Structures are given as structure tokens and as C-alpha cells.
Image 1 (tube, helix red, strand yellow):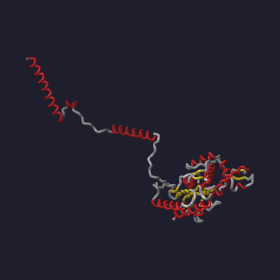
Image 2 (cartoon, one colour):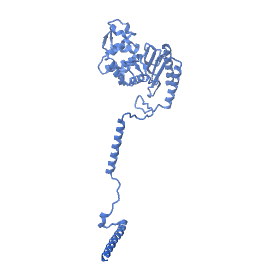
Image 3 (cartoon, one colour):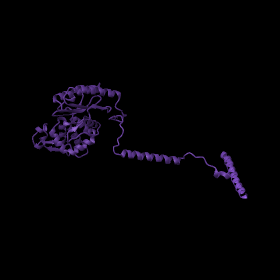
Image 4 (cartoon, one colour):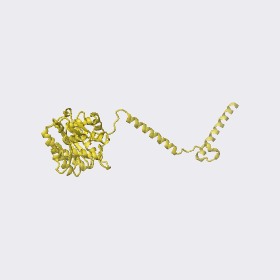
Length: 351
């Protein structure tokens, strides 16, 4: 019996100790400020400090950067499509999104008139306009591929004057005409006798003013051949244009004249010379026919088979670029149509 009594006594003692501990704990839960219990007290959680915030922020930035890099690097990634943005083509200016309402209304009227003009014509027509006072551009079928015809002479003119400007060529360089040069066909040079001496500057003038094919043939060899001309073409930004295949788009030709205007192909000195070669040409019955006589037009025309093209800068009070191209067209019909379209655009851009 003592054994059992002893056992019970121990259990009672343990119980008493537990009760005392609970009571003590309960009392401490209010606020135990006694120094001897300092270590037992639980300190409240403190907010993150500057060091912790920097670590977390750095981790998030690194993770986001790696994720973005992996996404962009993945095959088939494409950027989302945003509204079309047109940048001003001169000065610093501000960004114009799809033009102002006035610009869009003007463009819509011109495009409607263009469609009405060509609706009963044979063949396919495209056009492109750039307002040089603000950079706003618009057109119909402006990105479609057409045959360049003599528009390819613009690429050769650009190559000549770029090479002259960097010192690789001299405009006074001479070439002696031989019969093999005349394989280019019609033009003033094809009527010249063998042995005629002609300068590089004269070749440029004949290409611009008279669209001379013999001059083109000689000049493309003088500047370094087709590869050099193709390289300059891409440097200008005419991405859908090929000299060797004689193909381009209305928009690419517009880009040529826009960059020429802005002195981005050659300096103002040589730009002026090129534009002089393109003024008062031997064919003034296309775009110039639709513009008042007192308004200067520097343009390049081209005609071959069922193709009639014309493009240039119209020096109105607010100058603009106009490019008109055709394919599978009736030549007589196309010449009349281009002059009529030119008048529609002039009226729409200046009134």
C-alpha cells in the first residue's frame, strides 16, 4: 500500500507543478517585464528593413528580366500589333498617330477620287503620297510590286553621287563611247558616233532628264556594277526594290524621294544637282501635266511595254511627293490617267 500511496503522491506533485506553471505562464502573457525572464519573452516580428526590401526587389527584377529574355529569344515570338504610327519627316515635331482627322479626311477623298479614275481602266494602278510639310503618307496598293521601268535610274543616280561624295568617283571622269555601249537602246547617246567622249556628270544628266538607257548601261559599270547599286538601294531603305529584277513599289519610290529631300542620301549640294536633272524633262505630259505650270516638278518617268510610271516632288506651297505606277495597262490610256490623277492629288493637297 505504501507503494501505491507513494505513486499517487508523485502524480499529485507533478500535477501541482503543471498548474503552477500554467498560472505563471498566464500571468506572464500579460506583460512580464522582469529582467530575469527577458530571454523567455517573445519579441514581436519587425517590418522588413531596407536590406531585405532591396534583396526582394532585386530578385523580382532579375526573375522578370530572365523571363522576358527567354520569351523574346523563343522561336516564333512576335510583338503585339499596335496602332499604325506615322513620324514627322522633318524637324523634331511630335508623333502623329495615323495622322490628324484633317489629314485622314484629305487622304480618304484623294483615294476615293483615285479609285473612281481607274475603275474603268485596263490594268492595275497604285499610288503613294507623302506630305513633306508633316510627313503624313497614304496611298492605294503602295506596297504592291510593280515593274520599275526607268525608276531604276534613280538608284544609279543615288549611287553615282554617293560615290562622288565619299571621294570614290569624280563627276569629271570621262568615258569614250563604243558601239557595245549602245545595247541599252533608245536615247540621245545611242545616236552619238563611236569615240564620243562623255563625262560621268553628263551620263547622270542624260539618265535623269532624258531617261537615256545607254547612259544607264555605262553608268552602272562606272559605279561598280549591280552589286554596288543593290547595296545602296538597301541602305536607302528601299526594302522591296531590286535593281537586277527591275522591281519596286510605290512606297519604296516615295521613300527614295523623301530621303533625297531630307539630304539623307547625299548632301544638299548633290541633292540639288539630282533634282535639277529631274526638272523640265523630255516628258512633261504625266505628273507635271496635272500641276499648274508655275509649280516646279522634279520627277522621274518610265515607260515600257504595258507599264507607265511617274514619280517626283511637287514644289507647291506645301510640297509633297507623288508616285503613280501601273502594270498591264494601255499606254495611251495610262498617260492620260496619270495626268488626271496628278491633278486630283494636287487639288486635294493644296485646297
